[in-house]
Image (cartoon, rainbow, N blue to C red; front, side, top):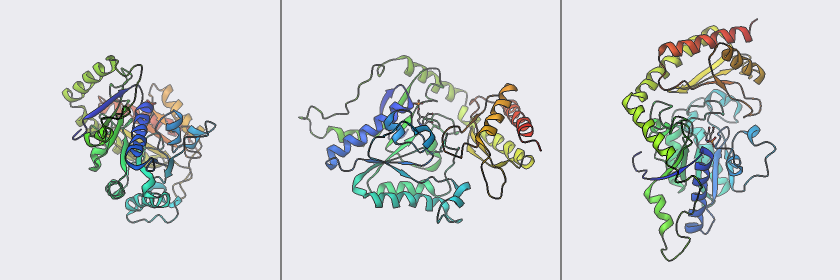
Length: 356
Ligand SMILES: Cc1ncc(COP(=O)(O)O)c(C=O)c1O
């Protein structure tokens, strides 16, 4: 991770995100009299299960019944091109730039001197496998620089190979200030997550040596546990030795094509999208108005695949009315036979669930 030399270990993606939020708040206190404390997050994104992470949560069903939430978190619109017709004023041309400009509009409404950070997933995961539209990330970076806003990229799902690059943001030429990661760090074999940041961000805590509070104050029972890093180091070595980034890219493209072929035969598939081995198929009642199918039908597809011995995922209890996307994240070692098996299972399940 070029330029990102400060690493904080922790136990979950939620905790890694909380650390970044704490850093944003502490920097606001140290540099801006506490004013630049607001953290923007995006509709449909998810950042974790704790109260502060749910305060930054763009999936209302995840947060329902757990409020009141932490002040200072502000929502910006999503960037889902497939559903741009549902967003007032969204253009057909240059949608990505328009979607990023909605973030700028929020910053201007809140006051740029009150906004400390923007927290985004590189590809929205549980909110619908939303790949960023053309031009989006470049504009987002430009806006963050213009208003001196720290860019926090949540790579808890996309990080460590899932999209075919080490990190999702690397596909889009972005330079983040914070990166959080969890699931892929040790491929699930140990509970380890990290917050990574740059020296120049970290140095902001060290401005007045006489101040006893002059460092990032964060402690955790398992913060120094060595099992996670040991598993992570071995996991990273295997990804390199077995060329799993290349495999992920190749198998991801293969699967994307296979899902596109499937959509020729199943009109219920309204859209397929994704990056590397992180793919989604959005199910709609008809392709004209893109009305989502019922969540129960999506779950019936998942269950049918399960009966065939194939585990797939789906957006669930996340975005009200829009839990209608099948999610696929095969192992990074998957081969063509494995992908064929998954797609064949989905083919059969769609046929049975949506027969007639
Ligand atoms: C994008 C994203 N961020 C953060 C989290 C929270 O991570 P954890 O469940 O490890 O706390 C998740 C969990 O699924 C996630 O998908």
